[in-house]
Length: 190
Image (cartoon, rainbow, N blue to C red; front, side):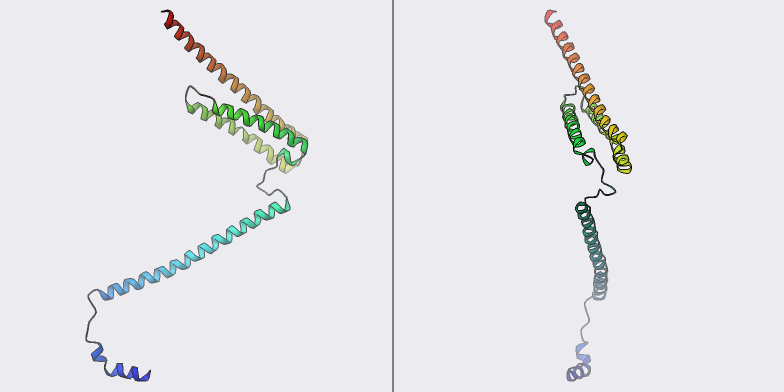
């Protein structure tokens, strides 16, 4: 290696006869800058990916732990089904009826347009806020009979309201049908 270094230093003039093309130093500086940026951003991207994976592993571990221990977590709501089999049957009965009525209302042909239907369905969904607050109380107080009765009564009231809505919608539809029939009949006899 010493011979090569000696040869290069002795013949330096012969090696330095050509100049680099115009703009060579600017291009070289630009490439160095890009490489420096890509290295620094690569480290941050890599660190972010590792952090995201770690958070996902942690969250999934907590979820599995909650499922294995069987304890309701801070965010998990308690339902009547969690209290006893008798309440489970009542809850299933009411939720099935309410779901059926909800689907009837949802599939009803609103003459005034779908805006009325959207408003009605949103109002029915907002009724569940009361039920969620009762679930919170049930979680805090335990299976207190007053809270359980209030939850059952909520189901009953919601079902009654939905039945009244359906009756009212049918009456409106019948009224529109009679009005249309009367209007058509008056044209026939005119």
